[in-house]
Length: 140
Image (cartoon, rainbow, N blue to C red; front, side, top):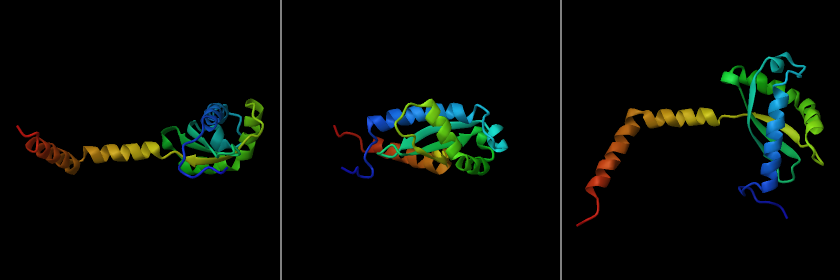
């Protein structure tokens, strides 16, 4: 039976994703990469999402301080088969998923929302809503 889009990941997907995230983080930072861009980069793996059949994994990564994001992402994509082989040596899975690397933009999005919440316009709107709520309080 096929899973529908938008359905929460299964416990197995979450468990295997976390196992892969942990091992991949170690592999990305152990200095074994042949690519000089990757050898000198410090990369955080924030999440690994797996397809329902566990055959494809999307690793969300963020270079330290966000430096050279695009160059590092391209280097990771070129080296995905290398990391897949290394991962197969480290994790005990029947099938090691194909790896796709994407930049983790959640930190950027959180920062953008934080700036919005601190803006003067939003602050005025919140204060106006509070005043309105106080005026429309429960009747006695």
